[in-house]
Image (cartoon, rainbow, N blue to C red):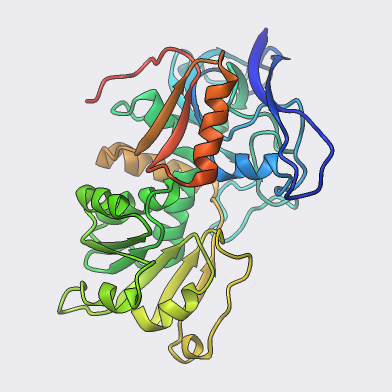
Length: 361
């Protein structure tokens, strides 16, 4: 069997300056063995990691291998040791390998590896993909294929950041999400609301603040304005005038801001550093007992727990733009440009084939 895929092609260039071109390739798909299942993919989503791979800013990029770690599709064949219950079932693929259930860190000596043009293996931007049955989960019925594809990496990162690492996903807690609009930040918003938190956001866009409030955020401010921290603090409820946790993907001077906004022993959970690769820790933050916690994606158990919350709470991922089909490379490049610009509100999705689930239940 063959699978049409979006892959990177190597060209010479320096790390961070090169931009590996993408192209279509035809890959051979072996028949499933052992506990493997063959997934006919219907949609895949982009992450910043895919853009970083093209800049050689992610470890050990693999060429001629399908990009993408987020995908949904139908199981069309199974290995001899796989359960027959998977046949003809719509599933979402776990985006990583090497981390099963340990609450603290990956069990694998190699650490956590993300699918897609990496040593972890082939990715989701292709027509067919072999996956171990342990790394698929039934897709929530209320989701379209595009919504389901939008969920894995961003949803998993958001779940671990808020529900596991922040230790503040409780009713009445004040949660600040910086840089609303990206996939992870929007999932944190959805999960925090489901947990009963008071959610506040920052952005450089008035429109993104407006849309976040429509989704349930209690308030938000432009971080480009002078004294935005005071403006944000003024929005908090009278009986709880400080934040309990900040979920941040930017880095930069967030610790300095947090020292003004967080309660004593409050927590910053950092899942990215798009502003700067360093994050200064101030003496004031130390005196205030502020905790700075790093987080990555998460374990297979975290992934399954996250999908179950989406299922039971009927949470709908936010999809910003969808490109249809595997024929126009220019449109796929357009998704990468949107990712680079950061202008999207929600996830960027490649619809690989006609959706098997398009209704909005």
